[in-house]
Image (cartoon, rainbow, N blue to C red):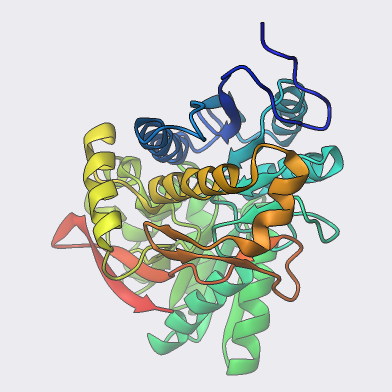
Amino acid sequence: MNTPPSPSGAERTGGSSVRIGALVPLTRPGWVGAGRHLLAGLELAVREVNDAGGIVGRPLELVVRDTAADPQRAAAAVEELARLGVAALAGEYHSVVARAAATRADSLGLPFLCSSAVLDALTEQPTQWVARLAPAQSRGWQIYADFLLSAGHSRIAIAAESSVYWASGTRILRDYLTPRDGTVIELDLRALTPAAVCDELAGKRATALLLLAGHPEPAVSIVKSVRRDQRLAEIMIGAPAGQPEFTEWATLLGDDGAAIPFLRYLPERLSPLGARVETALRERLAEAPSFVAFEGYDTITVLADVLRSHGTDRARTAESWPRVAVEGTRGQIQFSRTPGISVWQWAGTPIQVVDRDPAEPDRFRILHTS
């Protein structure tokens, strides 16, 4: 019989599995496409770790919980996974959900390697327990703002829903663009229909519209309305949060979904490791893997390295973040303290601005890199 896990997360004996809790949005209103890709990356890496002998002879086991984009559900899942004795947490895509999970993990002393969420303030206070692979929102969205300026856009409308994540994005863009002679026009989607958004764009002479809005709705309806409005034939639509990355976007919008630039966290060229993983992920997903699938794979790659080197004691895992040096699918992964960021951060995440090619919507064009 296995020794029950202690509250401090001490190592179990007897050849039992090493368990990692995985937080993933798998049902609505979560972004299900992103969750499916994230889970595919996590599961592929777990399989490869086990094929290579596991964690010092013990199998690695993923214990998956669906967050459904619900912060309270995520916090409850963190508590449950902590009681189950997981060595660490992995995953989550939605920033507001990841913030709730990170806050609870910090309070419980449970290491959490966040795969995809970008909100700068992932925890209110600096924490040793949480590290992150995705770039901080301020870094990625400033690169996006650079792209807008370099493309000649100085009157930029932001159509935003109400959330901490969208408000943070609006602030980053406004603070970066305004001192550089950009004009930011804020449109409140709580008060505007897609048709009313079109009227505002035409009246305020915006040259770009940024969708800080949920997928599929209201983002898809706004794109359709703008594309069909002759007054807005020259306007550029952008989606920095990455809505066009997933196949569902192209399925719902067809040609209308092309030429909408978004942020993607991939290098211009994949390494041999990245290319091999891309092939395996494509087979698993039956479609091209998104950057989110690579984030999932890299998360497990890092955690497996830490667990092999330092054991499954939770405190030792948290202490190891600054000593991580792991070759991931998108480059060498190391964590550091970044000013204004409360968690251990991978500062070297590659960042691109890409869009779907209007001539071939299944192909992505790289428009700008960090």
